Amino acid sequence: MKRNISPLCLCILLGGLISPGFAEQSLVAVPVTTLPVIDGLTNDPAWEKAPVITTLDKANGLPITLKSVYTDADIFFQVSFPDPDESRTHKSWFWDKARQFYAVGNDREDVFVFKWNMEPKPVDLSIYSDSPYRADIWFWKACRTDGTGYADDKIHIYSREEDRNATKIISRSGQTMYLLRIGDEGDSAYQINLISEYQGDILPRYIATPPAGSRGDVRAKGVWQNGRWTIELGRKLVTANQDDIQFTPGQKYLFGVSRYEIAGRQANAQLSEPLYGAGDINEILWLEFMQ
Image 1 (cartoon, helix red, strand yellow):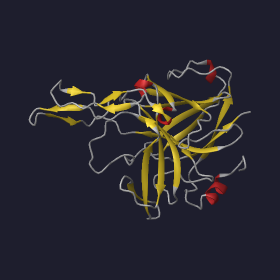
Image 2 (cartoon, one colour):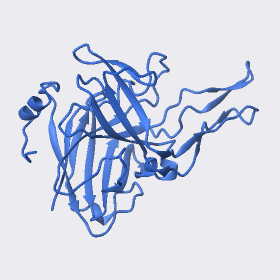
Image 3 (cartoon, one colour):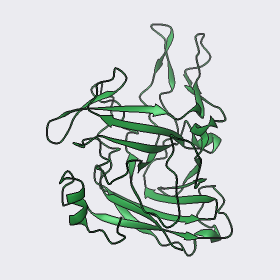
Image 4 (cartoon, helix red, strand yellow):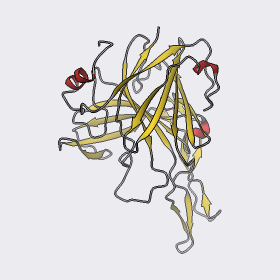
């Protein structure tokens, strides 16, 4: 794959499925000898020489800044974006006095997503794509995963084959497609806290647990300060897991990022993850490695 692929050539490679209005940028990972501390803070010396790019989440007009560094074994990302509210609870249990049981609340956590192309050629990674794809997707979740210092590692399988566990989607051209989200092998960083007897008016619905296996590959930590989130993520370049993308310095990798702006919205029974009206991939991004 040529290093200087143009937006026009990319549209041709994608069969014209992405609008020419989509931008294209490269995020350059620079080599470092000292690993950054994954703590969500910006004062780590490892980030000083890393170039920054700004991409736009068009669903809500949100500018997102990205940096990346790597060592001979690991790769790291720093993400930052404005957010007036720190939303760290998710679907909390609210006690229904009339019916005497706990109901799921309308509170929603802040979420950030990396979505990596796992196909051997460029693809449209959006959730309204006209072409099938398989993607490695990392979900940083302010409530469910941040407490243990991880992001949730999953696979997106987007196809024309119906699956009872998949979300039905009508693509841009009117095709019927299906989006299946599967957790990587292993244990997630959270479990549902099942409560039957009254223990308080509002209780957390999720319990933090250490992830295990491939689902615990991506370390992550976010800090909200002065109306802005900063999130740091880190993973091995090569995990050897079939449900993960494998990184080789010198190669280029197609990806996208997204900020799920769901916290604070009014409840809407017609909306279901990942179709919240946000969370989609807008801009074409490439990860490249400075040698």
